[in-house]
Image 1 (cartoon, rainbow, N blue to C red):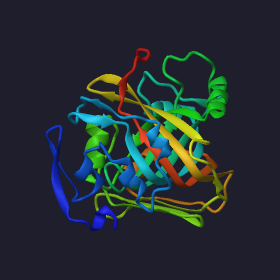
Image 2 (image 1 turned 90 degrees about the horizontal axis):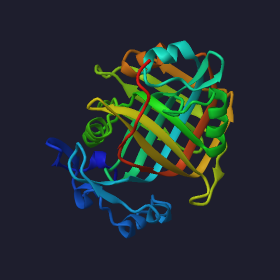
Image 3 (image 1 turned 45 degrees about the horizontal axis):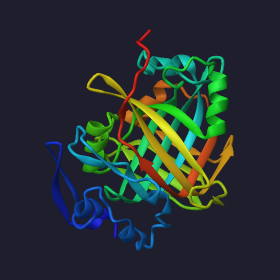
Length: 305
C-alpha cells in the first residue's frame, strides 16, 4: 500500500515538523534502511546497486542525516527540448552558462518522476531544468556536450521542482537548496504510456503531459548508470548535488511523436514558457530504475560576469 493511504506521524527535520507515513521506511529507519528488509519488497528489483554505495552520517541544514538517499524503485520520463541560449541565460545566475549544442541553442528539459519505494517513502516529482556548462570549465560547449554524452553525465540548473509530500519538500528545499514546493502531482509510467499532471495552487492544471512509452530495453544492475550534477546556492554559497541513476528498463527516441504537453497557469508552466522552447528532440523513459541522491557539497564556481 502506498504511503498516501497510511496513517501519518510527525517527525522533526532540522527544526521543521513534517508528516510521514506511519510504519513507512522513514518512520522505521530514519534513512538507515535495512537493505535486507527492502529486498523482500516485491516491488524492488534488487538491492545490489545500493550495497556498493555505503552511507555516511553527516550534519546538514535538516539536522544529522545519512547520505545518499536511496530510491529502490523509481520511474521517470524526460523531454529534452531545444531552446534559445539567450532565453536560458536570462534565467541563470551569472555564475552559470548554458551548454550549447549549436551557436545560440541550448537544452531545456521537463522531467517527471515516480518514486515507489524510497528511504523517505513514496512521492512524485516534476522538474523544469536547463543543461549548463560544468562550473569552472573553459572548453567549448560542443566539446562539453560530446564528453557529457559519451560519459552519460550532464550538469544542470533547476528552475522548478514541485513534489507531493512534506518531507520531500523540506529535504529538497532546506537540505539541497532546490526550488521545491508541495502540490497535487500525479505521475504514472508503464510500458505503454507515461502520463503526468501538476496542479497549481487552485487545483487547476499547471502542466500536464502524456506520451507513448518508447520501446524498453532491459539492463543488468550496474550496466547502465548515468550521473547528473545540479548546482544550487545554499545560504549564498554554491553547492553541487550528485545523483546516480541505475537504469534497469529504459528506452528513448529522437524527435518523438505523439507527445501531448499542456501548459496551464502556474509556476512550472511559467518557467517553461520563459525558456521559449523550440522543439522536442528527445524523449527518454525509465520504467524501472533505481537512484542514489547525494547531499550537496560546497563547490567553487566563477564569479558572476
